[in-house]
Length: 255
Length: 159
Image (cartoon, rainbow over all chains, first blue to last red; front, side):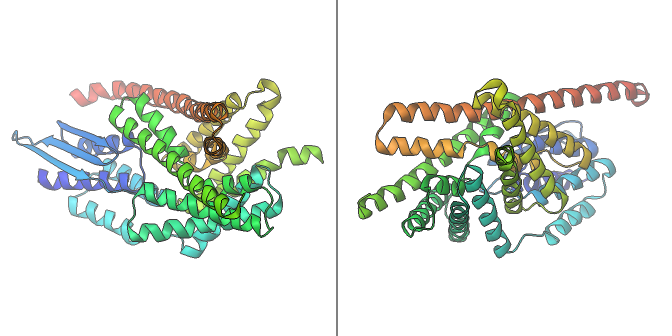
């Protein structure tokens, strides 16, 4: 068996799982199981949110290692479910490497994403109903939805420009707060705070905090701490962006 | 009529979760599982309100219910738990807390700022503890099942 190819296969699997938003323990466990399925007795894997290190020893006693650096990535549940399912099947059948890689590529080819207008509609629905959820009037809901759309446009634009997470969040928060102030000044919305809170739900790092805590409890200290830092950073970025807009509009409108 | 408006937020939570599940690229039935989880969690939050009178503990119970629901659905559909947990937890996320904390910080009211910051952190902590409790239990059960299975298979493997 070609152990170099095996290493490439398992690292590609781990990389794609993590890229679509899998938790650290899932990535490590999937790689470990894959190695077991292909009959590697001595294989180690270490993953943190932006790096995967896999090392194995071939039966001839030759150690092999591969490191994959993880770029910033979002969460794509569709891909995650597909890769997770594929990983389960690979563990059961252990097919030849080329076939396994081909199946992985097939998932990439048949990847479905919602078009931009559906995503913007989703921002409208999600953020608008959150404004209602927190006790806003129907008009506040509409305003919250519009601010959500502004966040969606802002995030898409800054992602295309290649901005980092912190800047994206500050920009999103600032743009939505600005839109909210504008809409209330026009008399469309009544409760500025409820509109902004609803729209901000598109940015809050809720699951990042939960995942960070879970990683720390599971003993993955480095992963947990770096994710926790990320969550705090995003929280601060939201507050900063919103405060920026509210402060500036307060200055100009004498509020 | 009052009763209805008390439970109305569950409907909003359901719709909001549908919206956010689209953003995380969830297709098909998964969308409704997420949204159902979100609505169920909020229902639990509202139902426990007369019993405990503390939104942190209410959040904790709601997180327990959502987590159990997501684990159950993930086992049934053989999908990662994150898929459902990620979106279903959204209504419990203290978005309001972050906003009011920021507002108090801006207006320079230090004591209000600190108390709302601590409250927000408390809510986030309750959420994480609830999820952790269920997922740790689930993992314990799974590991013990696997060990039992391996012990049963071991005599054949060693031959």
